[in-house]
Length: 437
Image (cartoon, rainbow, N blue to C red; front, side, top):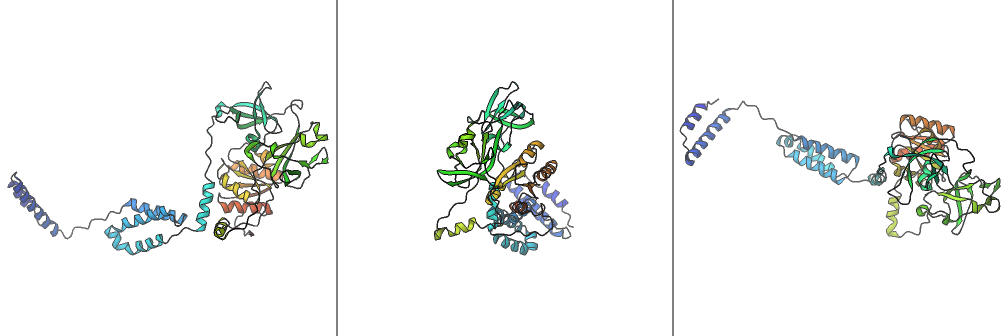
């Protein structure tokens, strides 16, 4: 190798401080270093540094495209990373053909109907923001059930709060339940909010009025001439042993602006000791609850321009299943995916009832399950001990039972089909035929 050290020493010793001398000295040094570099033919080639960030972006974009074909953001991310990697000389020369084929495949990725339908249900399954509650501030009260709603009394048997049916219906409360509640400041329509059920005590019969109920009654007739005589199971409405045809009026129910129509499902309640039951039951029986069930609508003749819209709305295959307004318990944890799963039950004309399978008390869970027709357990969201409790109560009260091993739309829909048809609770590796419409 050319020894350039002595030459550099002589140049530096003869370099003055003026601009011309410095420029000439710099040119001479560059020439000598160039000679040394040209003589160094045996020096190893420098290793090409690949931008790890671009590789990460490429992999991320490809993963998103596999999950959601045709997603514009994922396509832009992947294509940008490919272009950056191609600019690296060694990568471009060695893998240029492969990167070109990958670029064409990414550009050809299109959004499918399945992806569109998936996005619709993902929006529905967004978890609801849970209200912030400080359980340390809750005080204990005893529940006294009313025909609609309940009273909360303290240890001195004084009424402290009166709650509406909309606040307590999902809790399935009864007289004697012990709850923790706090005053409701954020909503002027409510006096207090129940935090949780913590126990039960048997109250003397002299302190409470016995209430009878007729659950899931079917409203029949036309507007202005509606009545109830049976429930969804075909059982007749009986008052003191006699069958009753009860006229109902939507004005009796004021909460949530829910309208009574032919096919509505309601709960009725009355005090057993009411003297009006003998002469005019309609005066004594109160409409406790109207279930929000989508009613079948008569479709007008569709115009030609709207045919495509109707086809898109029914693009998802529908199973041959009609629940006929059976009450379906959805056992999930912490209200996750509740909206999407309820929409599936509504689609097959069922009544969805959420059950907290993550931190619910055993007694509360039993009270919820015993009045159900079907219960579906989503094991992806349920605690292990709750899973056993749900199986136990479903068997005890002869409730149809099935398991959905994932939170997906199809898995839950198939579990609902198996439960309603009396098929195995678990799908497993066995072949089960799901009939479609």
